[in-house]
Amino acid sequence: GENVEQHPSTLSVQEGDSAVIKCTYSDSASNYFPWYKQELGKGPQLIIDIRSNVGEKKDQRIAVTLNKTAKHFSLHITETQPEDSAVYFCAASKGVKRGGGADGLTFGKGTHLIIQP
Amino acid sequence: DAGVTQSPTHLIKTRGQHVTLRCSPISGHKSVSWYQQVLGQGPQFIFQYYEKEERGRGNFPDRFSARQFPNYSSELNVNALLLGDSALYLCASSLTWTAKNIQYFGAGTRLSVL
Image (cartoon, rainbow over all chains, first blue to last red):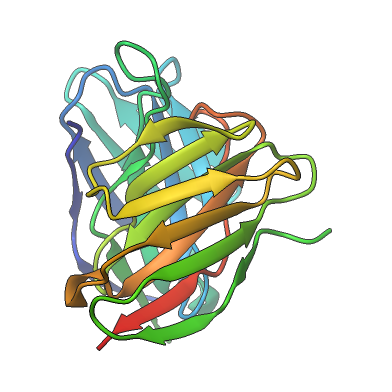
């Protein structure tokens, strides 16, 4: 099955600086890559996603890049703010398994992002 | 608009007991997925249901089962609880059953097995 590796596990940056979180996946059939932000006591919240027919996607201070050949994708947050502090998860999915059936999201282990004032 | 709602928020059980967790999806969403999140880890896929039928299953033992009702709400059942079942159980809803549809998560049910 799919395996998603996420690095780093903890990232501390100064407020206003950029943060980059990287993920690799193992199954070349995966074609959907969302990023979720999870705050303490809450469920994961989708912040951006990218599909395999796109190499980059941007939404204000957040961007995601995808390299299908290398099977890795990254989250970039610019001009970090205190409210960006949270745990971030990358995930991958094929959408539909070979032979039919839904393929759920496979998540990385998460990155604890700390924004230092 | 109400998001995904899960009940109860917290639950304490002892080994060997049975537990039922409940989820109501976002209005208009017909698919519900269940995930288990152990402390310090990412969520792990358990089941996905669409139109009351199981559409996907993760690598979990048969002690885990689920169902979806005509109003698209869902229950997750876990039998013969083990200490290792202690986790945050997350429900996610989406419009349809493929994971390419955005999944919106609830706040989860925190299950502690003693």
